[in-house]
Image (cartoon, rainbow, N blue to C red; front, side, top):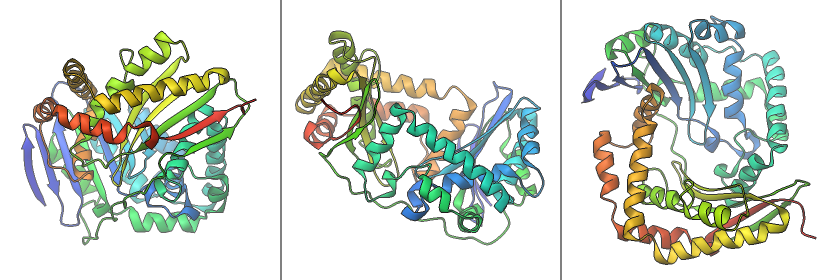
Length: 418
């Protein structure tokens, strides 16, 4: 075991089997958040097994060697804690938030889920029905479905374009043997990162993990990082649906999480559509009255990133709303941000970052992400300084490259044009 202190109250340990453990002590709270990230998720799936990572995430809650499904639900909830999990593009995560005294119990429960699930055929049949209902729920929610359709249009031949939930066909075809194989291949210590934050001591966390056998066994290589994702740019796709609104997403691929331009992109996205003061909100909603919801967003993955804009509007005003958005994109691509906008954008991003780290759960996730994204640890003050140092020329270059309306792939969902 190699342990290093990264900052005051912040430690990272690396076990000989490849497991990385991080913790941050926050003495002003009475709780602890602990999470476990597996470096396997939807971006690692073959098309015929789309949704298997999400299915496995569900299946571990159906019962383990030590606990049944109800016992898993009660173990932390009856003490006021919570247990959650989610499947993303690059990782699958299992997280607990508990009173500080219950940290060893949280480690016990998370270990049960990740290392000792039963993954029985009978449980699979029940959980398959649940996920098929989840897929139906997305299909019945157009302002969710349009994002899935847009990802598919943007990355038609890459797992970043696949549905995390899978499809009815792929989920129906998956077997318990398929799920157990994925668990055997991916859910081992060297493919995991464990992070915790709150009123805790690093040595107590390590002792709890050691008790659950996390440091045993030989090293195995972690799963490979996701490959770059070639995108279809400038495509326009229409999906007919009898809805009262037209839902539109337009966007393009950008760059991966480790790219130094991500702060410039985040500043641009905030200025474009990140709040009530943004250009899109002021133009599309306040000045033209064309939409209630209009916003921009950015996502960064291991293999690529995404810039996107969403608007929901009446079918008869959809073209006008799209044109107004494209005008703002065209203007920002050509001119970037002026000095005042750039200064506001930096302060906004800095404030969002600091406010987002006010909870143990957020601090925990921040620790894990440094390792998952292969970044060197930097203090919050250092990151604030990096944002302040983003040059205007970089912001302008990012705007010129990625905001051109001709680059955007457009997905519309709603009634057909008359």
